Length: 340
Image (cartoon, rainbow, N blue to C red; front, top):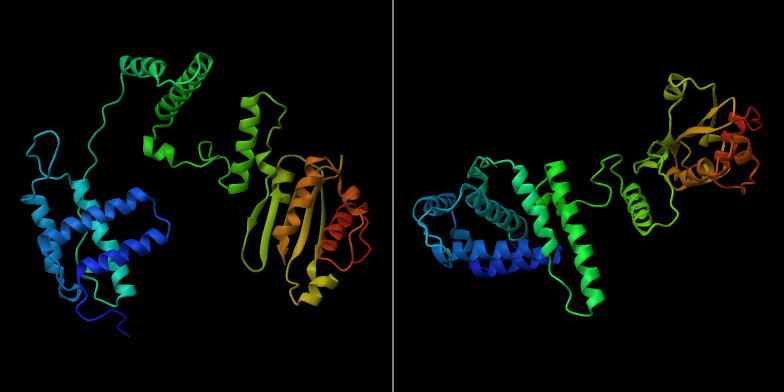
């Protein structure tokens, strides 16, 4: 069914597109870019009916931008638009017509318009003098206009921050925009999971504050896959543990023998515990089954507190619960399985 009113003008359609993207939570700079590009396009083509826009109209507009359009610049220059700016315009028009084809049921003329190609301009590497000048400039950062002590504190902290940013950019080769887009933990890329990044941020803040903190064991961070059945694990696999020379003991228990899983009608999967036979250290846990992503933290806690499978098995688990499978697997790893 056609959901658009007859004779819908481009300006009205663009207004709806901008409202839709704003509600979707796009950044204000992105929204402003869309509005700027689309306003320029409507000024050129006219506020025609959206049904009347053809592929050739779009091609003609892009060709006009490339060959005839004179951008207004602060510095008087006759240089044409850069290839990257042309591509950004193409991206804006593609986003608009993709939305219009879904929401307004109009043909998408951009399907037959290929994206403009451009080559990145080469960037000259910084010289030692350039780097020294950048770092020196950090010492002249803006001061807070309050007390003398406040000015000194703000200046010192901001200078250190700016130096850290510059050195990070130089060390990683990232662009400033790429660095600003990073989340906690992205810089190290050790384990790209949100909960791991959050833990890294806490450790970083504690280290900066000079308070007691911990050293994270990335190998034993919880890893979860939210599918059906769910998958959750931490630590070493049985093969990895053997390759590292451990005297491996394995305990395994299926959800099919668990009363709660039977009651839920969801009993595919198992819990497998990999432990060191000499000292009882928990080396890894691997689970497939109902709500195993919720059960995994018990094993993470046990590992952090240096508990053995025997000690986990001795913790009384309520019946009937899915967590009983972990108790049973721990008993199996300790050589004391009684329910299978």
